[in-house]
Image (cartoon, rainbow, N blue to C red):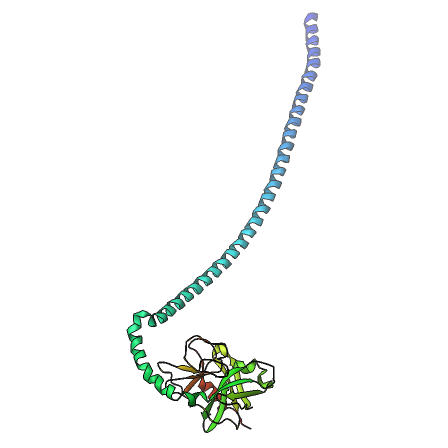
Length: 297
């Protein structure tokens, strides 16, 4: 009985010694696992934070790239609009070229027979002008600033209008010679006398074919008749003193100093004022309207 009891006591003592040791080992094992798991968690958290920062950078770069893309899109639309404008301008110029080609075709060799028919009548039309050329030329003038040594000389002519005589020239010739502040003098072909008429009115918009000047004085001896009808051929009368062509077809090569010359039709009527090259001129009716609106002292 004592042996059994002793065995039980020994067993209890062994259990008392073994259980704490086992419990301590398990606790250490769990704590070690916790430390490992926390280290891994901290590492994952750091990686997550780094990745999140990288994502923010990428997002900012994407937003910047998006703004730049919108700017490029705006510039592209602007360039597209410019290209469209240039295409429209090219289309307009191409149409203008076609019109010019059609106009040139009318004067080409394809229409030679028609041109010959016109030229066959020209001697008779010119004969009347040539027979009266001296009477026409005596109403063509050389004009200049009355202030010696200033400005330049130009061509002018006199007309008869409602019983009075006026000298007409291109308005830009007046504008270039001090305009309304200047004084002017004129000398007719076949004459050595200078006259000093009063400037009544002028306009100098030659690019709009609104380019005329009107003078009046009591020493103007006569003038050309006026009209509005353009004929098959129209002509320019020139100044002898300026050594210009005294008679040439409108549209032939122009010469320096011809501004202000009279443009006449086949009926020897003044229909315009020569102000620029080619077939265009200021209509004489603009000068006549200016006379109607003027007050003569």
